Image 1 (cartoon, rainbow, N blue to C red):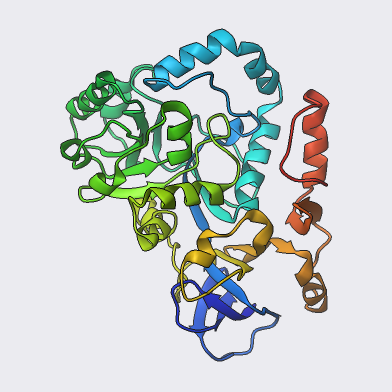
Image 2: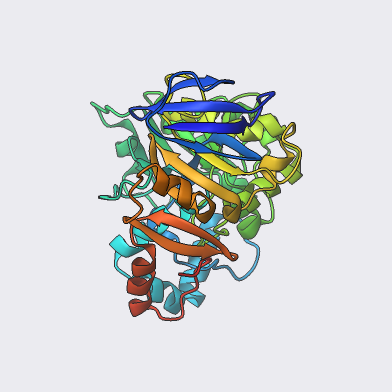
Length: 383
């Protein structure tokens, strides 16, 4: 497959991307080797498939639930269980398989090709995108049973431990981070999620911090000082689930950009190259030899700056390719794909803000199944 005439974010001119056997074979300003099929674009940008470093895939049918600003996550948890339990139960009665499938689609529709799931290991048959679970997932100090034993158990083979930590603005949240560091007896690789209360000294003891600004502001009206922490550890980006944040990752990125705590390139890296490094993935950049996780979108502005990238929304995405497989395409590419003998039968048709997309699998049927359990549930797409 040859993706022709796309302006790779950060590159000086339009180029062609040659895909073979799930990897990027070449990136050049000329066609080069003739591919068996090709797609031509006009006024389009390309960038690596996004890496969402924090989500709970089975929690994305929830609306945002919270009743006021909280001091920390334990206070929030107690409050919503006291005041919002019927709303929580109404979503949890939907089978976890259906909830998880929608979590996958939520990410795919946003141009995410890899998502790090936090929580119990999910058995996922879908091949829509890469679900990274090759790490130890601890919820938090307060809500994970036997967390000290789990952190320090012998014969641990996976590379990192991912845990919510310091999710609050009070002194207790800062002390929680110290407690985790103190009990990390074997100096495991720690990836801290949220870390709003983290200071510079603490940051140096972490392999990485996952920044989820939308979730932080919703719960705490504050977020992690990544402008400070980036000097001492890696900063990568996550959305969290819709229980505390919106579904549109591009709104998350715009909020993050507005804080000016990361440069435009640092923020882009946090959801592509830096994240790939933290998780040990062969992706995150568009270059020869990398996995062919590529997103192509409309160029809505000046392609010589990152303004175009940060102005995107799901409806602007033209193509999502994961390991060389097309998982989503815009209706404007339909005729080209049919001419290239691409089988479109396994794709469902949906609309995002009046923009028609074809998505692998039967997304309309999934929505119908979910509505059997909760008829009034709201989706950001129509089918």
